[in-house]
Length: 413
Image (cartoon, rainbow, N blue to C red; front, top):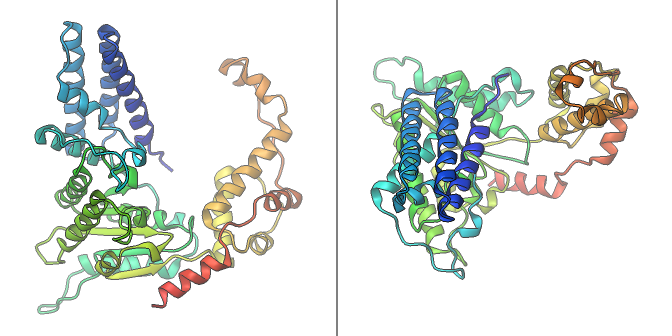
């Protein structure tokens, strides 16, 4: 399965930008210029793996911007203030909870220049675009859920008899315990449609600049429409669209209202570009009622049943290449109550236990460097029942019956 390197590039670029800003602030302009050029080099590589031509051009424009900053510093000129602010606000995956405006917290930063802000928004949204590599074959179980999703986009693209107007859902809310495959479902949907895939989390929508989080949300949906067909997947929707009221700040309320406006903007008309909005939550009862009402279809994604657990274990074991001496039937029975993500983590831990047991000198050998390691063959053995029993005993399932009951009650409303 292809590996998405966008997160690694984003983190590396952000680290260079942060270092460059510190050096510039300390008046070490020559060093700052060097680090800006390093960031530009990484951004150029990031552009080479862009899934879309528009995204590639946007990233190349960022390369030119970073090189121009470096050139100005080489001439011992102070970089423009707006440019410095831009580098500070283009982080990928930066956790901005600590600087988010709150009712009782410090006053928010003033708005920025609109031209600089718009360029930031486009860059931020570009970095949310990924190329999904998950297929339906990578998902064990959830057959009914898969069928519902396939019917949705099947109705969108199939030819219809003259006078017939029937459409699938454009806004789907996936709810269920953590680790049950909600992200995989969205990824597989995007991949099968060969659609532009926007993978959105809380930290990619927040900004330390007052009022800009709402503008980022608007830029997201605007970009999705321009790159249609698109799938916009919003993970942990409750963290950005919780119930209004209480101690929420004006920025929080504005963000929820922006979501409502953008969701209303997709009216499912024939002339509208195909944008499928999929959102996931582990806590649907925390969502604002108005947000819930905008999703035409709610789909429960439960913990895997016996057959699904067997399928999940089989998929992950085949990826490791390890021999397994325990039947899938027995393993399915032993893992009742575990999510797909937990099963993946259990198998990873189990494999590492065996590697450590069979290769006790591996850590010492690693001190000798890659050349020495390349001459050694990893020693392995089959996975046996005591291996499974030991790791399961140390790793209990995390989803409680209380949570399952609450999800069932919510879904029955």
